Length: 470
Image 1 (spheres, helix red, strand yellow):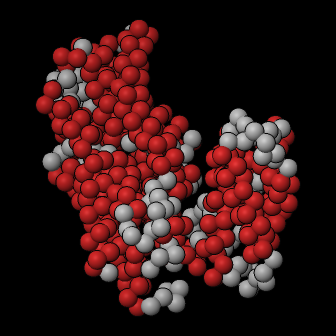
Image 2 (cartoon, one colour):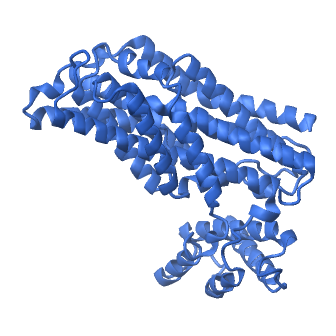
Image 3 (tube, one colour):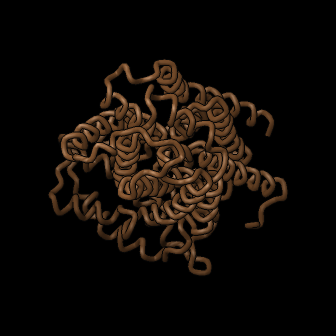
């Protein structure tokens, strides 16, 4: 495969298998988020619910795009790592994958609805921090803290949003819906009225689909992290895009960057501007080299990727700076020539179809098993009363809508936290804070608080161990 040495091929295969295992575990860990309400309201039989959820997750991954996936890839600046020994890159991906799987399996075993997103982010941060302690890193940072803070805000706000919106939606339902059956506990082994059942199935479908579109992309990002780190000559750049088209983007970008006046710029902005001009010159030089079979030379691909990422990052910061004098037309031109559709990022922000299909299949299959432990927690142990039709529909609708918006804006959020906080909000809206089971809420909160530090510590330790081992 790709002309790799046998031992590297075996380790690459192991890494890809571990990525699929993570997504499989993610599937059965998060199944309860979608199916708990339809099972506990007797809207669907458990086996039917999990199979349907698995199918919707599969489709969600296929149609969800790659915006969130690229956020995962860019969280850890792989372009700083891949020029090290390839075994170091393998140690990196094994450490973050194993730590994420260990914590996910542990919380699943104890029936805790913890966040796979928090686990993955923590694992990546741990590897980055461990890398930054290496004596041969030349003091370069191992974490993209700007991207990490953006992702952190999305993960932090998601449960608060889910809790609040569920309370508001329950209030509106009580005011606007006259049918009291919606607020009653389901009768044992009796399906709800047709219209209520339809609403619950639609919301289950929505959560499943958008879970696939958001969480599935995290798996895609993981695989791309592996492929770029271990086989950069093949995956550092999108080979399906004509390399010569990059010249047209540079023709529009270079004159604008060259005319920026350094007078009045901060030291940081001057440094970014100087670095951007240097990277543009270097990129142009590499573009002038002869192509091989219509593609960039293998030995040039990684450096071209680094140039592209640095140019994109620095220009974005220059655009946001108040001290940089650019017209609205100049800013629009720069943004158009940097974006992922027709700009420079179309060469770096991509995922092959086989990667998306592999992750979609792993997540879809995982969704169909192992659901019962966390379904019981969500359905019976968050609130003191049995889940009503209105509570189930409110929580699912809030989760589906919020995850859809997060995916649209390329922000990774926690499906688990969105749904469990929505259930908690709907319980509070019915009978106040006393309607929550304190023990379960404490356990969920503890898992929420502990996930990041535990996964960071695990991956930090595993990375050092694999670096020593390999």
